[in-house]
Length: 166
Image (cartoon, rainbow, N blue to C red; front, top):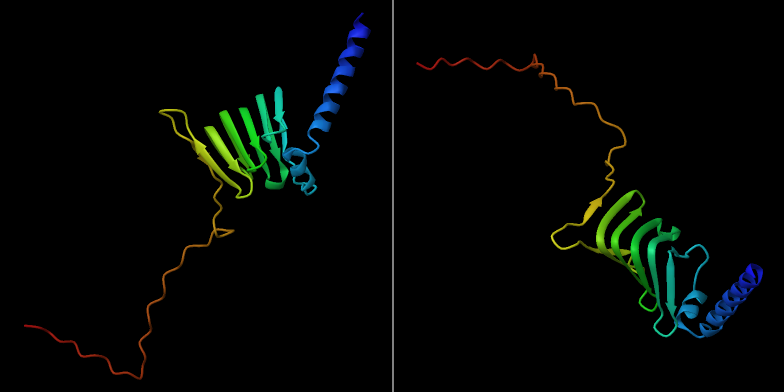
């Protein structure tokens, strides 16, 4: 009985997957994928994901992880929605983003893919936290400047007379 149940489950997964792919054939999701440059893929992992072929919105819920190597970005949140037509990612629920050593925490974060811009908003009565790596312009510390030596009087000039005020 277990073998038959597993076989039916496998068949249903194949059927649903095939139906989704065939149904998405003319959707904005597939059209967006046709313009992908290799290496620019954004990977989303989560407990549950749904895709709406009519609106082009992909929703991920539960332990969401986003990886976008082209922008050296990693993120985690409770939920994420990718709006494929606008190329906009909206993450909600304890959002944490790490990009090239810089990080930001917020309740809601919108990432505009084409602009490479984040818009972060906190929970009510809270704040957004950002940590940025700031590099000094100088690569090594410079020694402190030594004082200039006192000028040596020139022997060719006569000495100024000393005036005694009375």
